[in-house]
Image 1: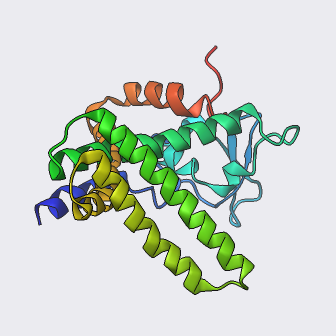
Image 2: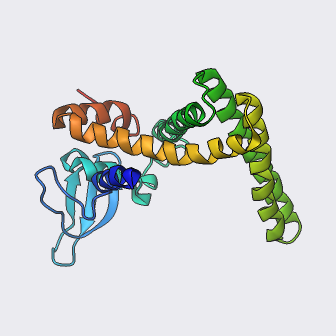
Length: 231
């Protein structure tokens, strides 16, 4: 119950906006149709309006800007002159980092709480090794499943075998029982999500709006091509 009391408010605080909003809190009518990558403007179509509404990305509220990062319309708007433009590479790098870092912290915390081992080097070896081996095993079973006419039983066997090997690996790294290794792996997923929510909520609650804008523009929005470069 204590965890629920902490996490549920964070989920509400960090949930994406249900409607597109401007900085002043006013809602933007119509449906998002496209994104002009050059002018950094979102184009909204509204049946009640004769013309489309164009809104600069920087004029959106912070929640709407964060939400737009996950929009397929944005992902389809990259320049077509290259298969992997610089902005798309940076988006991939930021996406991977935003997932890997909280999960690693979650693994470190889980190992410290369950195995009583605080060494971050252990956490690094356990985290990297478990995810690499787990991904390889699941991929192998996925390929076997496809080769044998989509045999789902092989795929399910992979999801059963992988945790066993991962538990053995983690127990060896942390010098603990296999059961504790199993608990460390699966608990770090939950802890990693909590770490992400806490960091995001802390950023939104503790930093003033100007500082939030500068932080997100510098680390995320400018590198991925959403916010125009500083002049």
